[in-house]
Image (cartoon, rainbow, N blue to C red; front, side):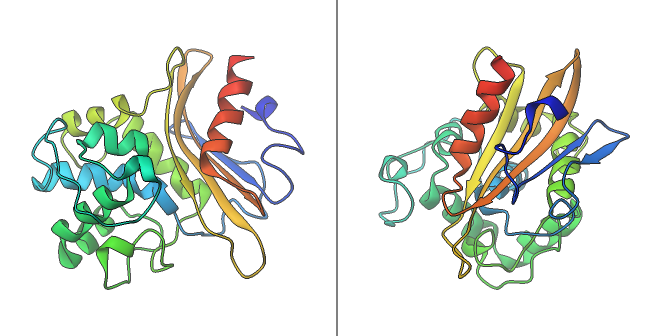
Length: 228
């Protein structure tokens, strides 16, 4: 993977971590082991938690839009889980988190050893309010478990999440995440998932930290470089 990254991508304030099941490689030690808010990358696990607890009864179950004016306009509509993952729908995953509830969410986050754990009180804000943090290397290790379906959940549920995030014509799946600007003027742009390198799976976490950082932009650039 090293040849995919340079001074422009993810940039001097960026970080990349990869994991192949036995070897974790941070490419920028200034950031790779520091923890940040996960943003929408946590929806990978909210989707799994929803399926595992029965809050989401199936990937095709249609949820009626609750009218909450959050996130991008295209995400404000009736949705099933697959569409919600693709659109990174804010209202949908906030509703999933609410229905899971604070006690269960805290237990599920601890069950998969997710970063710092969740210390908040409002489940719907768990991935954006700073009450839960994770590093790129921790993200890559968890993505490996999802790739190999070794998380403590039904394999079928892990497959559903990955299959709904696959990039067409590439052995690649992943979830983006973006933040608003922090007081230092910088934003976060995540892309977390797994791809195939030399015929073997490799989990990754790419993080940009710039004034214009945007998760979908990180994905677009990685896809472009992988295609080359």
